Image (cartoon, rainbow, N blue to C red):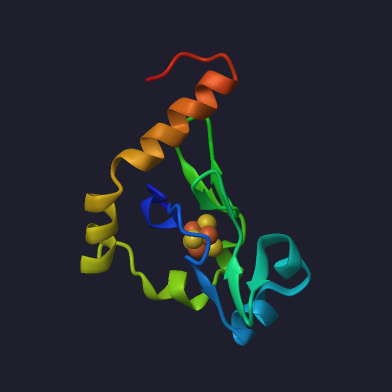
Length: 109
Ligand code: SF4
């Protein structure tokens, strides 16, 4: 994962988790996903999916990459959908990185 833009949203019902997704997440499902009504979604934290890890060196990792939901699997890197996400949310990964570095007392890039 290069930018993580598609993992950002203020919506709590953002990444749907199907029954198959829940099963694939295995023992980690409860930690990263939850039910809202009768539908499951990835948990969101600080404007992004809880499984997204913002690394201080400026990379973005998905903690459940091998088991990620089908919605995430279907969004191919470099696709039109990917480009759309990057165009509309371009500033969010950079903002998260700045916030992380500030919280650690490091200068912003
Ligand atoms: S599961 Fe991984 S790829 Fe999908 S939104 Fe969360 S961090 Fe991003």
